[in-house]
Each structure stands twice: as structure tokens, then as C-alpha cells.
Amino acid sequence: QGIAVIGLGYIGLPTCAAIAAHRIGVVGVDVNPRTVDAINRGEAPIVEPDLDQAVEGAVASGFLRASTEVPEADVFLLAVPTPFADGHKPDLSFVEAATHSIAPRLRGGEVVILESTSPPGTTRRISEWLSELRPDLTFPHQSDTPDVHLAHCPERVLPGRIMIEIVANDRVVGGLTPSCAEAAAELYRVFCKGEIVLTDATTAEMVKLTENAFRDVNIAFANELANVCGVLDLNVWEVISHANRHPRVNILSPGPGVGGHCIAVDPWFIVAAAPDQSKLIQTARSINDDRPMAVVQNVIDATSGLAAPVVACLGLAFKADIDDLRESPARQVVKSLAQVEGLQVLAVEPHVEELPDDLAALENVELSSAESALERADVVVLLVDHTSFRSIPASALGNRPVIDTRGLWR
Ligand code: SAJ
Image (cartoon, rainbow, N blue to C red; front, side):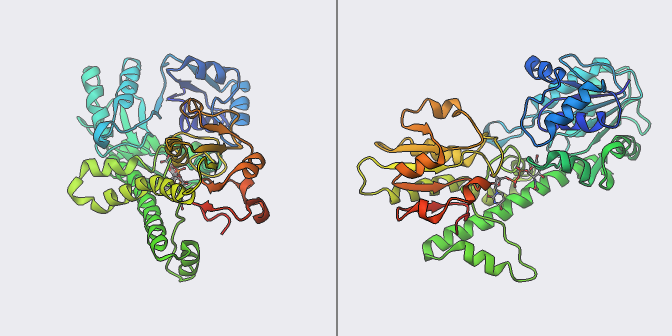
């Protein structure tokens, strides 16, 4: 029957393409009919290097098709969002909806794999939900020899390098029983060149959260150093670069905050699971969340004395060389600056053709080319270290105040 992937976003669609490339039939399922139609035309509805080509080839070969309906399948792979709700509590509604959508298709003998980053215990909850929906079948929390196998294999690909990392990275496969892990690993052996490591489901859930919390805490350390060096009037980039010459020191880069849909979200799942034991993780979150407003304050200080300051903001994406503006600290900085009376923002983002709606609605924000913004601005703020900004010569920056939040021009 083949494989059904539920959720055709940044993880589901590349996974479909990677499986189809091995001439295995995949049906990608999404609730959005426009996503489904685009894929069936051979187009990738999201921007990611090499994804377009992979989807076009997979559809043309007949091994990938998309649908809004869940088909019968041997393997169901769930790749739906797991955001947080109010109070930073995990929101499992998409996982629950995906579970409901596959339940009627089960006949016994299938493998269900959760790839979405999830709080500890989620895979087991899926097993419980399924057993309520399908009392005629047995599931792994009920039996060591269940009718349906269930495992968690967290995605760990880096946006911008997804098509490379989806094949190259090691994978952690956590089963609700050892045979569940083994059954799920079979799928990854088809398209992964990295090692497949087997464990239990809750460990796999915690492994994924640990990876992103580790990165968040390390970025917070760099951001805290930037705050400290600001007070001491030291160049944080120089401090970090010299410290990193120590053989056991490897500090990350400070920036205007942590964006994206993972690193700023996943640590909260650990906090929700063990609030009293996760003080460092919570502090890191607040250090990183406070960064955009610190940048805004620096800009306001730099414009003091100017009646109608014009500020060039270079970059809107959540990180370098991508077009993804969602959950971006740069966008947050622009939005807050636009609240300052009399201040005009020239937003430069070479990877988009128009401003997102919330910024387009603001009268004092306009999308500008880098050249024009540098001609007109009183203050220049670099928010994203896009490669194209690297070559801006010092002469184009001139003598006006420059706030380089990424250390690109250090
Ligand atoms: N950032 C800094 N300083 C740094 C590194 C990053 O300020 O030194 C900022 C970036 O500018 C960005 C944010 O952090 O705003 C996150 O960027 P990122 O490149 O660290 O990570 P993501 O969100 O693109 O992808 C992460 C990856 N996780 C890890 O590296 C541990 C990826 O492997 C995961 O698959 C992904 O989260 C996910 O989906 O969970």
C-alpha cells in the first residue's frame, strides 16, 4: 500500500520527496487544498534549496501524489506542527487531529511514526487515543505484540539544508516497544545515510527537545555576553573570537534574538514537563526573548536628537539566506521601531518581493533596496547576516551610526 505522510510542510514534503526518490509510493496528505494542488502540479509550495526539483521529479515519476484524504497505507508518518498555546503549554491539537484522520484507515499491521517535535509522553498518548478510536485493534501501550506499531523519530533537519540533512543526519528512532522501534527504523534505512539509533519513545522525545534547548541556551550565553560587553563598552565579537581560540571553548553568535518555529518553542516543552528543574532553560528563553527590545532601545538611543529619523533595517528573515519571515526577531524589531513617533523604517529584505501584511499595514515602514536605504538612512541596523549584505563596503555605511546585531561587518 505504500506510505502516507500527514502534513506537507517543511518536514513532511521533503520526507515525501526523499522516499519517492527511492521509487517507493508515497501519498502526501494535507488539509490545505492549495498545497495539495501545487504538489500534484509538481511544484513545491515552500522555498527550500533543491526541494522544487525533488518534488517535480517525484511527481513526474508517479511515486508521489498529494491528497486531502488519508489513504490506506503500511506506514503513516505524522509531520504536523506542535506549537505552544497560552502560558507556553504545548498544543497537541494538530497531532490529535492527525491521529483521528488515520484511525479509520488502520486494518492491523501498520507502523505509525510521529516526527513532530513533541512533549515527553506524546507517542504514548497517540497509542491511547488510537485505542479509544479503534477498540477492535491492539496498540503498543496495551500489548508487546500489538496490531499497530508506534514510534517517535524526531525530525532534526536545518532549514536551508533540509534536502542534504534529511539524508545525511543520524536518526533517533524511539519505539513504544523494541519491535516498534525496529519496524519504524525500516523506513529510515531506505533513505537515510546517517546511522539509525534505536531507543524508547519518551527518550526520543526528550532527545529532540534537548537538542534545541541546548542550542537555545548556548545562543542565550552569547546574547548575555553581548549585553555584558555593551555595558563594558567592549566588542563582543572580539571577545568571543579570542575566547574561541581556547581548545574547549566554542561560543555561538549573539544576534537580535532567536527566531524560527523550533528553538524558541521546544525548550518550553521541557519547562512544561518539569518547571522546577528547568531554571537555566527558562532563563535562556527570557534572555533570547528580550533581545529584540534591546536592539530597539539601541536604535532609539542612536536616533536621539533627530526630529524625523530614517532607519534602514537590513534583513527581515529569521536567519541568514532564507526567505522565511515567520517568528523572526528582525520583523519584531521593525514592528516596534514603527511605533516610535516620527520614525521612518526602510526595510531591506532581498529574499521577498513584498512586505508581510502586518508590516505593509504600517504607514512608516517601506520595503526598500539596500542601495536606496543606505542613501537615505540616518541610522543603519543590520538584523540578518544575509550573504548579500556582507559585501556592502564600509564607504557605503559612512559616518552615521551603524548597529550591527550580527557582527557581520565587525
Ligand atoms: N542564532 C543566533 N546565533 C547563533 C545561531 C543561531 O542568534 O549562533 C539564531 C538564528 O539567527 C535564528 C535562530 O537562532 O533566529 C534559530 O536558528 P538555527 O539555525 O539555530 O536553527 P533553526 O531553527 O533553523 O533549526 C533548528 C536546528 N536545531 C539545532 O541545530 C539543534 C535544526 O537541526 C532542527 O531540525 C530545527 O531547529 C527544528 O526543526 O527543530
